[in-house]
Image 1 (cartoon, rainbow, N blue to C red):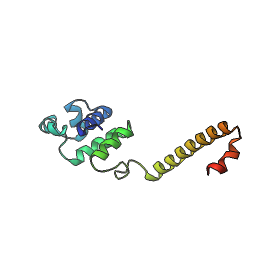
Image 2: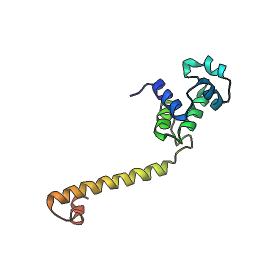
Image 3: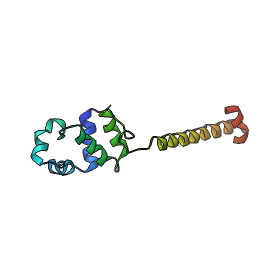
Image 4: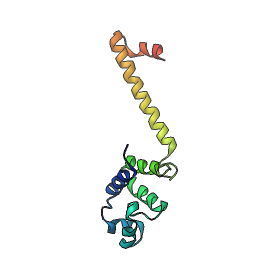
Length: 121
């Protein structure tokens, strides 16, 4: 499991804010302010971290989600992800996995998949 600072630096990298000046532009503060808060990755407060989550999300939702989790929130709570869409995607993934299992069972049994579905269900 990566440390908070590893997650933070990954998010900064994904968002393209490598330098203190770039981070200052993102946060709307001075480069000197970012430098003063170096022990927090250049962030002054919780809202700065949320700003970074929002900047990271379009480029890498997974990295944004990791940072949001580390901050004790979620992408859905920040309005960046629709929980219903995530559940729908999970359901379709489950269906694909089930199809794979049924196909493998049908191959082993030398039966058509339609004949195997009732046994699996």
